[in-house]
Image 1: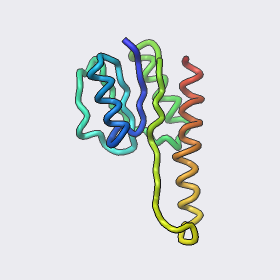
Image 2: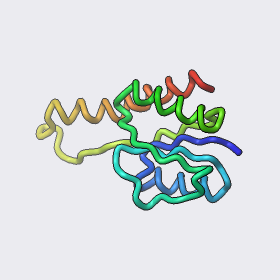
Image 3: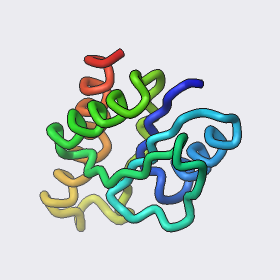
Image 4: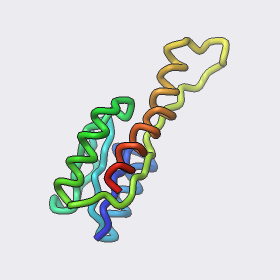
Amino acid sequence: MKVYLVTGAASGIGAALARALLARGAAVCAADIQPMNALAGDPARLLSARLDVRDAQAWTALVERVVARWGRLDVLLNVAGVLKPGYVQETTAADVDFHIDVNLKGVIHGTRAAAQQM
């Protein structure tokens, strides 16, 4: 049984991936900053976790939790992402920081934490 960590699992592509992996018999840690109301599965193979991908320490703690539960982490699927549509001249500095923090730093923090256990 492979062990997956899927971010952005509360909706969209992340939720669809988590459901598909569970249907295939994988162990899945489904993580998101939003509650995962629609995701259900065998408690032995599903761990739902709140994760703010911008938080490097939260990443380390979650990866350690996955390894403690299943003994390893095989695959990280960094699906979490944000996009606030609009015109660039209307974008604030806070909007830019938010996009970079989630879409870039979140991936780097997650990949670093996962790679240390793989």
